[in-house]
Image 1: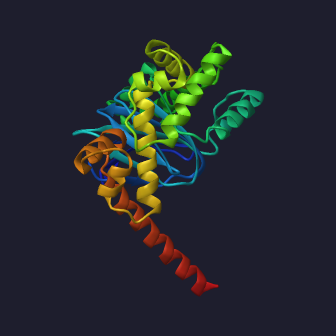
Image 2: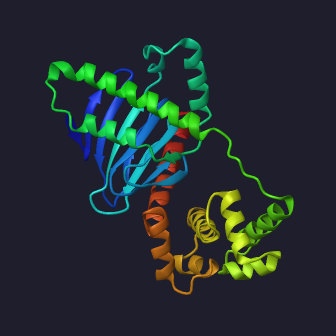
Length: 298
């Protein structure tokens, strides 16, 4: 076991790697291999996971999965003492897993289609990860122990992903679907407004209880959470793509005070708007430098 920049390398094998990372309020960057399957489990506190221009909140004891094409992984703590467990299944893992060939192909196809960050609550994943972290076995037994536990985690992961891929049974009348779609479009096209549920319900021609029930049933989130989500993702886009002051962004998104916007942004993403702007500036500078070097070499 060794440690570099806060990353504790628990075990490394040609087909998989097990890491344990204590996070801070600064971005932790981890390089990922192309065609690797990455399982991240929150061991303590909440954190934010950013990979391939996507980010999700990872709650304590929850898990996150992604099939990587080689993009860098960024993690940041949302509170003090946040820790994550990272298990990377490399390209050759399936071939040495003793899983039947036809099922290997099915799993690989399923993993390759996982281009979005997924989070889910799987207590058995968390408890198994804790077994790996707290292992007190002699060195001679470690390789066998980690192989067995990694296979265990892999099988649990596959089972959960197959369960999550099953289509839901959403049954709404066409008229209800049209009304909540209109409500969604109103929110998305008027992010400078602070709609209340009664206002939206009156506008689309339904009552408050129906709107709340059907909106969550169809979109999987409350009206309020959807409004906040839209505002935050628009804010992030503006921070990345336009040289606009944070105070101006907050006004355009319906916040009276920039401090209220900054608080909401940090609560949603786990980091401040200025931190994101700094990260993006560094990325652009590094990219520009790489382009310059490439042009010289050519």
